[in-house]
Length: 264
Ligand code: PLP
Image (cartoon, rainbow, N blue to C red):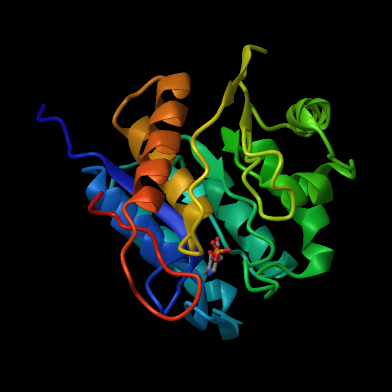
C-alpha cells in the first residue's frame, strides 16, 4: 500500500490577523511538510494589536467538521488551541473520544498576550478534568500551568512540581514553557516525558515584541513532527528549535505583537 502523506489537524480558533491560532498552526504545518487540516472552534476579530471580538461556532458545526474529516482523511496527530468555553471543551473532548486522530497535543490556551480571555474562567476545570486526561502532550505556559495545577510557580522547582502534577492529572508528556513575560527570569522550558525522564530546554531569549503565536507554533510543530514519526524527545526539541528560529528571523507585519516568520 502506498504510504499516505502525513495529515494533521488543529482544533482551535482563527486569527484574522494571520499570526496566531489556526493560521499559525497551518503555516507551521506547511513549513514542516505535513498536510494541515482544521476544525474551527471560534472565530476571532484580531490583529497584532489584540483581540477585538470573538464568537464560538455552534457545537453542531464542530461535530460536523470532525465527522467530515473522519469520513475521508487519515489524521495522524492533532492539537487543540483556543476552545472558548466549557461547552466547546465538552464538544471537542467527545469528538476526540469518538475518533482516533493519533497523538493529542493539548495547548491549553487561556489568555492572549494582549489580555483577552480565549477560554472562559469557569472552563479551566473542564480542561483539567476532561481534556488533560486525553493529552499525549500538554504544553502550558507558566500562568496556564498555575491555573491547571493550583500551584504557584516561582522557580525551577515549581516548574518540576507543576509538571508532575499535570502527569497526575493524566497528561502523558508535559512541556512547561518558561519563556513568559510575567516571569522573565524563567526562560527555560521543562520537559517531563511519559517514562518519567525529564530535561530542560533553553534557547537564547530574543528581545522582540514579535512573539504573537509562539505557543501555537510550538504545539503545531510538535504535532507535525509526531505525525512524521519522530520520537517524542526529538519532536519536542525540533519544535523548540523551530520556534526559536521563527522568532529570531523577524518580519515586519502590523503595529503591535507581530507574527513569527515561518520561512525561517
Ligand atoms: N488568538 C488565537 C485564536 C489563539 O489561539 C492564540 C493563542 O493560542 C492567541 C490569539 C494568542 O496568541 P499570543 O498570546 O501568542 O499573542
